[in-house]
Image (tube, rainbow over all chains, first blue to last red; front, top):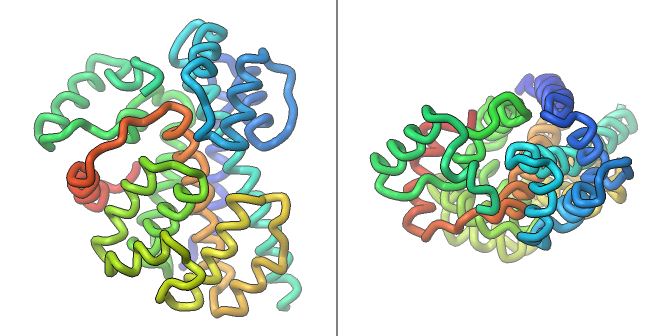
Length: 108
Length: 193
């Protein structure tokens, strides 16, 4: 349907948008942790991002409240949440594209 | 909702809009829509554009099939809000019994092999991305799925990897079944961006 390249462009737009957070160090770090990696961010952010990446249904009120206190604003806490989810999502997207391309190459 | 500012809106325009839409619709505007209104200078608009493309753009997958994929990702991620929301849209174009059979066990549900094999790919992508391999993709391609179809489906799973995490981490309020049905009409009419 002529859409595959466009998905890749839109995925990169989402990735790039994470650095537009009010605390870009926190959001880019949360994105890496959400993807299963490590980053030198405050422990309240790291704990929240790790839980979001691995099992978001286990996130607690206290984790979000701690990120809120660390950020000093709800917007800052929200951006850490969103960045962690984007990290988890793009980790999966990148893996899917690699798998699809390898299978397509083998079929040629 | 764990962050009150998202619930009420972060500008006068958004606060009024949330109230107006809720009044006209006759039910509380779901938290997913409130998140879409919030912090528009961050990643939300970019995610909205990709979600619109994945869910409503040209694709060999029907809108109902893509909504069902979204509901499955939600189920794998233990997100009751997104299961309810996207099941409610999916059943507007598919037999509800089939949708529920897929949600119970897609391996035995009465669906075509293209969709079944694609759901297998999306399940590994969602639950074990580091274990996803060319062999998983090949299984779907061997079932008649094209590279483009598989990439369209992977885009659905990717955007819902974010949306389900937002819903869980922010603790979205769970609408009633009737409210999910009414919201489904709005999402079919207005889309995601």
